[in-house]
Image (cartoon, rainbow, N blue to C red; front, side, top):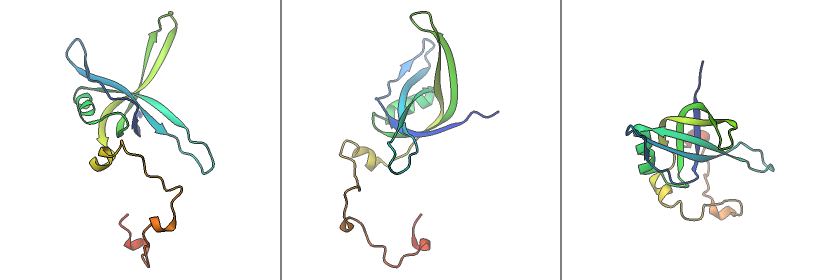
Length: 139
């Protein structure tokens, strides 16, 4: 059986490092992940609950803040609990196996700035590739 989740999304709040009574570092947060969409469709976003333990928790709380883009690899975990009214509930969350930076430090530093939008750009905003072929492109 296979339980693997790979997500890229933006943190919805600053992650906060906590410690269990046994001294184990932990953080829980959520990330906003856009769904795929077609032109003309309305964008939809899912908010995924994430839990990180030990060194992953320390890394995430040290280097990531609200709005930062983060890459998560982990597994889905379910927890059963009773709410304050005694109703049985199930929580779904992704437990982090590894986390990584997805945007450059330069992009992170300017994340407070207004994002660039090309929806109203004109032809002068783009560089001419001339006679370049696909073989000339760096990607």
